[in-house]
Image (tube, rainbow, N blue to C red):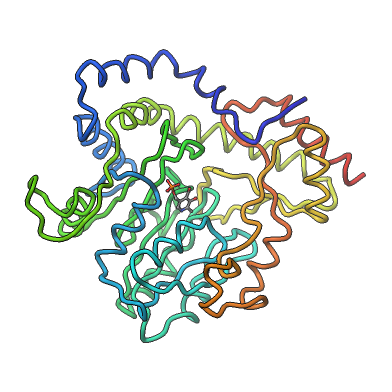
Length: 371
Ligand SMILES: Cc1ncc(COP(=O)(O)O)c(C=O)c1O
């Protein structure tokens, strides 16, 4: 049985009749730029994220870049970030004029740790990017006091964690709720995916929200008047229309992902050679990825491929080892937990429409490999 890593056509089949009229409505009005769908989506995402403001933009990458630009970074200004993440996290630091400083991760959750952040702080540190990787949150309650002590901005990169939450004290906190700003990506493969690129920034800070809203429109709140140089980084109304429909399903989709993750955990439990992903007890995971650690990972991957089973390796080369960041001085051995993970991680198919027969085929192939 062929099992794709992700099957967006299966999702499309379930929402086709809802999305078509929403798109048609935008087309009839020919209101493609900053139409009413944009503020409607912003209100809905702000509510979901427990945030006062949400500002839509063109991608999850721009959602990182714009707040970084507000910091006015220079080449010696440092921003701490994990190395075990998608390239955009550190690319945005570079493109905002700053210098990425990479910190190691927790071996269980793959998320950046408070201890690693603290070790990486220097007098030149200006901000921290906390990535909530694979769908579960990093320990914000441990990271925020460090940021406060050193006067650092905290950007929560929630590209993979829309709707994820963490119990802090006796309150559930959403991804993006507690940082200076939280960022989301609507890349099609994300849990809430557009039909193209899209992103969102959320914040509790009125002044920052106003500045970000300007920065995405060439730096001017009033057309043809520019207080600073910004970007053309708008979300399309058509994308917002798709996202408003999909948002109605997000909670149920995330629950379906959790159910499939629980099924995998049970089914994988007897197989020597694989470790199921660990959820931090304080977290409600949304399983953007279901990432196992596997012995002889590359051989397992080849075996899965031969059986028609899709997989992903996130990430085969962490950012501190990328050629473009070689001059930052992080050689091999500098981030041991990250470097161990890069050779072991394997992400299995997980999406709401994944059937039990498909999951059985995935686990059966893994079991055969280690038998
Ligand atoms: C952790 C992380 N940060 C940032 C991004 C960038 O988002 P986008 O592709 O929408 O620019 C992504 C996903 O692509 C991501 O996974």
